[in-house]
Each structure stands twice: as structure tokens, then as C-alpha cells.
Image (tube, rainbow, N blue to C red):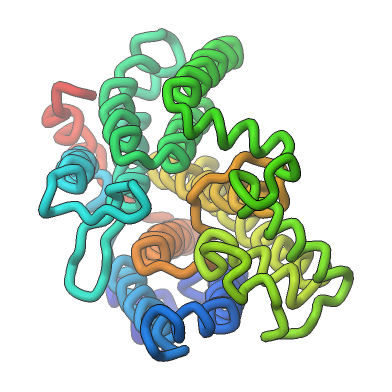
Length: 406
């Protein structure tokens, strides 16, 4: 069945799988675990809010089907297409981030305007922005690689589009997405060959900026103080974090059993979205937590291996976007787990492929599809000796048509 999606121009009769089996297996396991935990965590909330316990279960099932179909479509797109159109994706993302702030277009929830209603799906602009920024940065690093490695100007030029993205995310506000995006771009530039001393200076500047942004908003300072000692106000500002910690404590080694969580019964807010990991810890215990983390670790390791293989074969655009997408997966997973266990201040970031939400799932599957396409094209190159990337003349055209912003 899977071979039906093998692009005809890439058929090589070698018995080699057209995808990395470990990535597909891990992603499938995470999606299935997420579906099960969302079903468990959301039924009581769905019954109270929507009159049926299966409201979120049905929607998540539809999201999964759409995400899989979308991933199959994206997987068939040659990587050269993304390299040639990277600047257009960046401009499209900026339009989305502006549109979400326009009254009547953007949808406000809990004081944040982050979503654009598109039929039955609320499109989260920040999720699309992450995908588009990585595609753009991958192309930029290929075009300006020597400049990035030898001068400050090559590092400073991406600051303009990144600053626009971060500024618009700050206005939503979506501070968590801004942090992930900044971290991803910095790691991509560092892996592109930036000197370590420059990297330290930029990280220091970014941390100073984040501290300033936190201090500029009283509610963020309150969150930081709550994070330092949530039990000072367990029924007020520290409520969500203390309830998450209670869930972990109840889970013990083997959990209370699937469906037996108490914290999901209106004690733990956002139990099926940002804090689904706490419900998993309560119902499946320490064993379930370790299993989930191991699956993420294996998937991230395999994704980095694909990026490393692309770099060794001098397919730098493939390598950089693989690294970028992998950093997003690893970063969001680490932040979400850190927030749930109380190691990081509360932030509204989903657990990739696990938390409820159509935008996050669709974009995550699209990222994985691009990486799997990269794996396919690298295998073809290794088997046939032909480069699937743009040839020298097309790369020259890309350089000549390079937009003024880099």
C-alpha cells in the first residue's frame, strides 16, 4: 500500500524502503498514544461543554486522517520546490501572522488572538510560521553559507524577518512560539557554521531580550514567580501547576489505570491539550512517561541522522531544514514536558503529535513528510549517483533571483 505513494520517477528496484521505518513507527506510536490519552482526558469536559463525550475524540480522529492525507501529499513534493519558493512561504506566513491580529479575522481565546477559523479547523498561525521560517532559513543558509561562516553580516540579515515574526507573535501574544522560533533559527545558523564565540554572543543577546519581554508584561512576571513556588498560592496563580504535580504524584510507578485519572475531572485545566502529558503520567505512571520520552528520543535521533546524511552528501538545504524541523520537535517536547513537571514556567505549547489540536498535528505531519521526502531523495542519490537537488544552473538562477531581504 505504501509503495503506491512512491513517486514514479524515483522507483529503484532495490527493495529499499521509500521512508525511514523508525520515524514512521515513532510518529505513528505518538499519534496513537495521543489519541488514546485525548479520548481519556477529554470525555468529561466534552460532555459538560458540548453535550457529547465524543466531541474532541471525533475531531481529533478527523484531524489525524487529514494530517495523514496531507503528509502523503507533501511527501510527493520534490525538495527542490521548497528551496525555490522559500521566500514566498516566509511572506505568506507574515500575512497569516498579521491577519490573525485583525478583528473579525482572528479568533480570540483566553485573551490571545492566535487562530483563524477555516471551516471546522481553527488554523493557528504560529504553527504555520514555524514551518515557513525553517524553509526560508534553509534556503538562506545555502545561498549565504560563506557569508554566514565568515562575517557578522551573514548572521545579521536573517534578523529582519525573524524580528518581524517574533514581533507579531509577541502581539498575539504567543511567547512560547516566539521562543521556539528564535531558538530554532539560532541553532540552524550555528549548525551552518557560525563561530562559537558569535553563537555565545547571540544567545546572550536573545536571553536578554527574552528577560526584557517577560518583564514588560506583569502577567508573565506573575507566572515566573508562580513557577518558582507554585504552592504559595495553590488555589490561585499556582493552581494549574500544582494540579499537574498532583497528577504526577498519583501516577506513581504504574499509574492509576487508563481512564482512571482524577485530575482530568475539571481539576486540571487544559487536560487534553497542553497538559495531556500530566494525565498520561497519572494514568500510565512513570513507566508510561519513560516510554513516551523514549519514543521521542528515538524519533529525534533518527531525524538528526537523516540531516547528518544530507550534510555528508553535500545536500545542505536538505540538511538545514531537517535540523530545523527536528529542533522544533525536540524543543517543543522538552518545553511541554518541562512545564508539566514544573521545571519550566507555564507556556501554551502543545506536545507534538500527542496534544489535541488540528493545526499542530497537520503542521507536525507536514514537517515529518518533508524529512521523509529528504530521506527518499538521499536514498535515490546513494543508489543511482544522481543528485535529486537543483542542478548548478538552477542554483545559479536561485542566486540571481534572490530577494533583497536575503
